[in-house]
Picture (cartoon, rainbow, N blue to C red):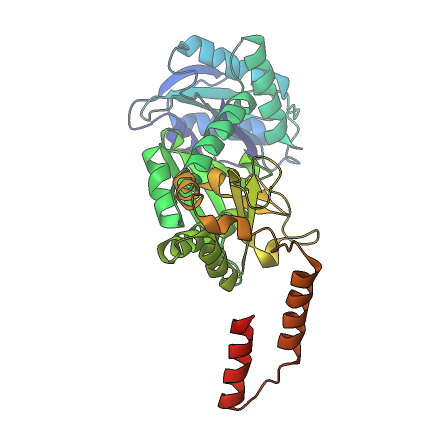
Length: 384
């Protein structure tokens, strides 16, 4: 259950809000309050609070929101009991003034509370230190005792669902606009943040069903990408999209792996074929996968391993997009494949000597030669 608690000095408006909820609020509990109006109850609380002038933020206010995972199966009395037990754990006693109201106007039933930290004898019974954290822990403890999912357990489930949907969207799309649209179809809102230096620099994901505009100022729905996974970073998503777009461009202009590799290399990407078995020269070798990455990101001291990124090999084509598996199959029939990872081999010392001689000849050839001389060089190489 989502929850919030804070200490502050209130006005009668806080009590008016809690007791209204568009005319649908239902008061389920009150203590040491005689008046029937919000203004009258405020003055009663303020009078008691003034018995301890050292405490300026004399009110404890907050709410507990019941999530869809629990639904509206809890009766109002059970809901009230959860709040009362949690408030008791943080110091509210039967000598403190309080008021509890259930709100039903939004899709998430939630209960608001206002309690006086000063009891009727003038003693401050509720410590302000870490009140939000302590109240949250109290709510979780009560939920566990009653066999209900806690906000932490629900959060773990939601994060796993978000990561699964995000990974699927990353694999099917190749830019952030399409990613946002795809996630929306899955029931999520993706909020991107940016800065001048890095462009897109952060991401927050919110479940559409979790949006609660009535408590938005207190509780911000959703999770940052770093909260969802410590392995997937925004930089990895950005570089993955770059790789996918580079692959699609190379695919348009390449008829074989050799041309494909050359096209990628010109754009600053590495290319590495992974075979199912040990490579055997002059034979058909079955491809298991193809790895591609930006050269500037690969290596020990560069981009670290991520959810889909390998710091030494880059990205697996079959992992980042299922459509690339068809690309691997279509390209794998090319006879050029054996020449990518092996060097030409000679069966005699003479042929080795010829190759060495030609390499040396190329090395010693002047950078600038007359056109006639250049023709002689070409003719000589051709005769060999």
